[in-house]
Amino acid sequence: MKSTWQKFQVRYSSSPSSKRWTARQDRDQFVKKAQSQNYRARSAFKLLELDRKYNFIKPGSVFIDCGAAPGGWSQVISRKVLPEFDITTEGIKDFETKLNGNLIIAVDSLPIEPIPGVNVIQGDFTDISTQQKVKELLKEREVDVILSDMAPNFSGQHFIDHVKSMELCESSLNFAERVLKSGGTFLCKFLMGESDLEFRNNLKTKFDSVRHEKPQAVRKKSSEGYFMCLGYKKK
Image (cartoon, rainbow, N blue to C red; front, side):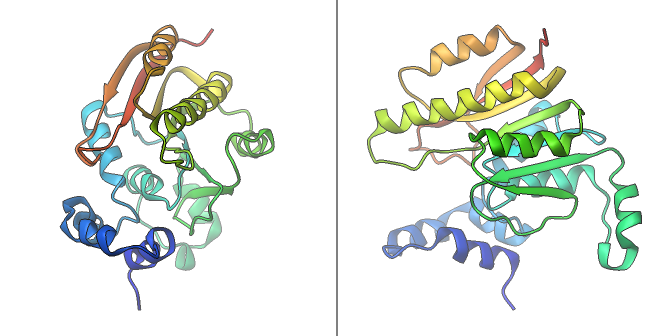
């Protein structure tokens, strides 16, 4: 039987021209750690590092994970805030009780295999219809943490990819302004380029603290970065 890592590696990471990709994966310490710790993606270690630094994944909170597939970040959240339990033996009622106020919503246009305690919505997060499904799950609850690991379909032209990544940041921020609670946390991935400074300055008007982070699990040659935003100033 294949491990969880093997199933998701095949499903999301296979490529016809995979020799160089496979060689890089074999050398990657975070790929090895993901395999050994049964995380679905090496990106889990980006979130783990940021949480160690800022401690924003806390029990009893509402989380929205945008661009969640294959589910590595939602795994991190689930493991930290939910107790270990087996729904097949303990039953639905006990399962709901043990959620202890935690609500984890994972959204992606790609399918996500079930994760204990995580509500999965398949759909494009930028679509109003998908956002409405998220709001229905919230049931008027305000959100403590919104995470966006969304990335555009890459064109190979950095400027175009940068602009598309900033559009995804804008979309997730617009949604955050409607549902994030006062003092809440917003984390979004972006590709560095001409307009990220303007977006950062906009974030500074809405949050007490805005930091540019590049976790160790981001590959050195990547232009990928994260805006870590703490203390939402709800109007």
